[in-house]
Length: 188
Image 1 (cartoon, rainbow, N blue to C red):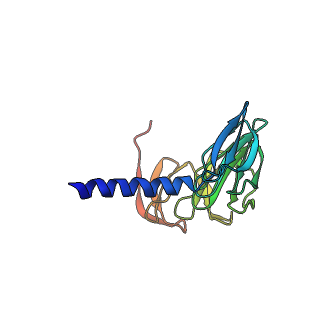
Image 2 (tube, helix red, strand yellow):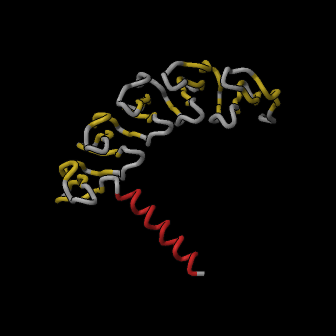
Image 3 (spheres, rainbow, N blue to C red):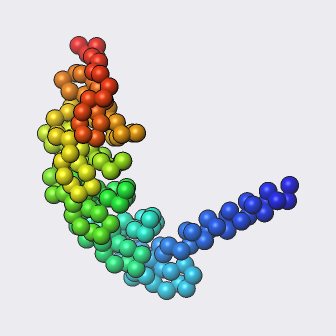
């Protein structure tokens, strides 16, 4: 019985150490910054209206009602000029500016123009993107791999995505080829 408690305590210590390696938020007046949890030294000054905790080495911050991303040293990876930013998935994050979406990598390099009407996060190296209510898929370099012609799409799971086109539903592979035959809906 004692060994179970020791294992639980050891796991808690490990988890605590993982999280305390990341800078932690602090508040000064109305603004937030980040400090090193071991030394208490500032990583950033308190200049953000809001901050999110670090995840995978990056934190999303808000300054003057615009969002950006900083790295573990407090350096800007994506400037604070976007209306919304999603967390990195597969080392790519989605940004929104003036109701249009685009993607950046963890180096702060824009991999697509900010032109999409809607997007999904990356999964299995592909992200669904939409323009004028038509969906397709891009890869991590921003190249359109599957043309934007579908009415609805799912993310890829085990190399396949469910799609619909003109009330026909079927699955495609990462080349856009049908891999499961179509079936029809009973929409009226």
